[in-house]
Structure formats: C-alpha cells, structure tokens
Image (tube, rainbow, N blue to C red):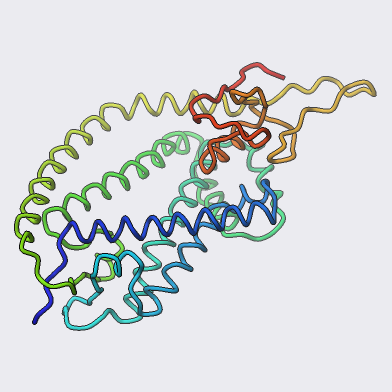
Length: 323
C-alpha cells in the first residue's frame, strides 16, 4: 500500500510536539548552566546554551536517522523529493543548520550591526575589552569594519535597515506559513531549503480531503491578513523609528560621577552583571537592576532575581534622572 503525503494538521501537531520537548530541554539546560556558572555568565551565554540544546535534540534524532518525538507521536516519516527514500545525511545536516544555527547567527549579526550603527565611540571602546574569543565578538568586529567605511550621514541613514530586516524576516515567515496552509508541504523554511517532506505511515485518513480544504481556506485568510499587516507596517515604520531614537537616548543615559574624594561612596552595583548600575530599573518588589540585565533576565524568567517574586515584564519601571 503506497504511503500518503502527510496533511497540514499532522505536520503542525508534529511541530508543536517537537517544540514542547525542545523547550523542556532548553529550560533544563538553562537551569543547569545558571546553577553551575552563575547568573552573570548564564545571561552572557543563554542563547548559546539554547543553540546547543537544539543541536543536541536534532543530532540525536534527525541527524542519527531516527524520527523526532513529534514525528513518532503523529506517525510521519521524512522523505527526499523523490518520496521513495529517507533524506540523505547531507540534506539532514542542511536542515539542522538552517533550522537551528541560521536563526541564531542572523539574530547575533543583526544585534551587532544595530549596536554599531547606534553606538558611539565610548560604546565601541567598552565592547572592545571582551576577554575571550567568541562568535559574537567576531561578528562585532566584522560589523565595526563594515560600519567604519560609512560616513556619519550614511550611518544614520542605515539605522532603520536593521528594523526593516527584522520585520521582513517575520513577514517572510508568515508568508511561508500561508503557503504551507495552501500547499500542505514544507511547514518550516528549513525543510523547504533541504527538500524534506513527509509521508504518513498510519494509513489514509477518511477526513484528509476536508482537512486540506479547511487549511486552504485558512491560507487564503492568512494571505489577506498578511497584506493588511504589511500596509500597517509601512505606515508605522516612521513612528517606530522615532520611538527607537528616543529609546536610544534613554539607554545612553549614564549615572553621574561627582568629583572623587575619600568620602565619595562607591556607585551602586547591579547583582546580575556585578558592574556599576546603568539605566536603573525597578521591579514591582522594589529591587534595582540595570535595564538591559533585568530585561534579558525577564526573557527567560518573569521573576525578581533576588526575592523570586513573580511579575509581568511590562511592570518594570525605568528610573530616569536617578543616580
């Protein structure tokens, strides 16, 4: 009996199951890293820990020639474009690199480029004091060399480029999902790049045609929503750029340092980065941290690092003119 192509519902359910187990592995690795290395080093290497967790998950499943937990749960298998054999090792390696490493690399590159375009000489000197080699330091050096070739006017003109690229990637992902709803193949762009599709091993489904028709209708609605979103993004681009410039001004604020004397107290320190607190930010429980430190912390745990009180990230208070 020939195997039927997997429909949209099966592929989405498989992806959701894989994402659940990936999140569980990420959280376990983050907690272990924070316990061993401390909060400061964990914040510095959080994205790398998550990358290694994803590579470990797909290395033990896809790269080894096995089904992922989501694929096994749904009952689908990967096949190459001929639909007669499993993908080659080269295709599987390409999928893992595009699915795990390329998003990480793109995020790091855009952050380094944004910092170079918006930061001044003082920011670049402070970043140049990094101790060990890392991919982020290498990307920062490449961004410095590229931005160094631009004049001040060209640098200001290129500042919106990072935001435009970020929004374009998000819109491209939504366009790809809408195409998936219509065509029922390649739920991830990484699988489209590697040419990996799925066949269902559980036999034909009586409701398969109705499922595909429903998702095609959803794909048409998604296309319409994407067009509306794109028009709104174009209209709001100028306002968002103005808001980013104001935020950059707030972020560049630094605490005042009076004339040194024997009686001058030492500047308050942030317990997360263990450095002089910059851009002081208050949690609902009253503890103070650097804005960048506590914002990065809240991306993983929405709680106070000191007293563990739970709170929503939007309740953080940025203290202006606070020394």
